[in-house]
Length: 278
Image (tube, rainbow, N blue to C red; front, side, top):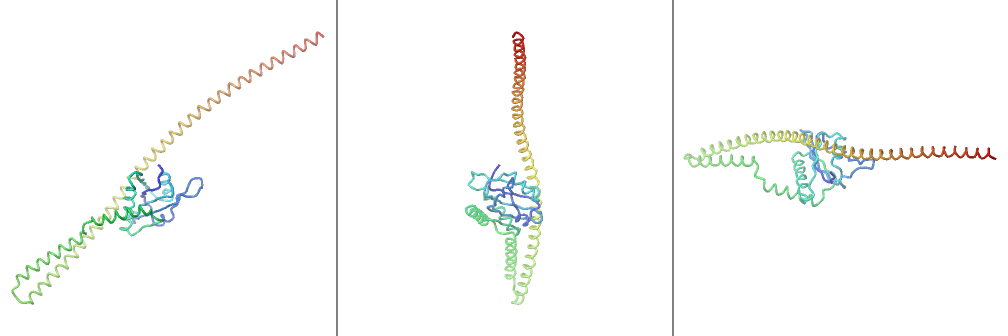
């Protein structure tokens, strides 16, 4: 299938790979020009996600072969529907933009079409508006609220002077300072575990997608071979017909040659007989 826009995921990808990537045309006719490329990398998984738009439509399987020939592994491509108003392409672009922002490691080439870029930014902004407050902010606020409530209770029970009140307030402040770092450490550990789990899931998804792509490509190759087989059968039948025609013409020529020889012999005999009579 031919398309101009693709989402590509692969392993063995790096900023150097993206910067040097070229999609050569067949028969030495130059290369397919990249209109826009945005790439996000996962250093831990050594993988990359590409959003690519070419100046012209290209064959999907040829693009996969180009990635593989330049060292990429387990290459998976996704094309987008032409009748969804660019929705699927926008979602793919948002995914790469978000991944690039999270990892802080990416590559950009060319200029994104303004309409597509605006639509992607609008989706990201809407997602941020709907995103709930972070877990860290919630737990910190809860810890402070709990400490302040404790402070109020203790203040109400204080019957001694201002010195006793100051000691208890100091204890409350110390408790809050101890609670917040504990939550921060816990959240950091959870985030690190989530990053590793996500990387592992991405790796598994990439391998499954690669196997699916390989099966689809094999089916496509089998279909091409079937077409070539049918073409060869037709050409063979045509050649056999031509051979039969040539055989008929050859037999006719031999018959004509024989007739010519007989006529020549008869003519020679008649001439000899006339000379004898004379």
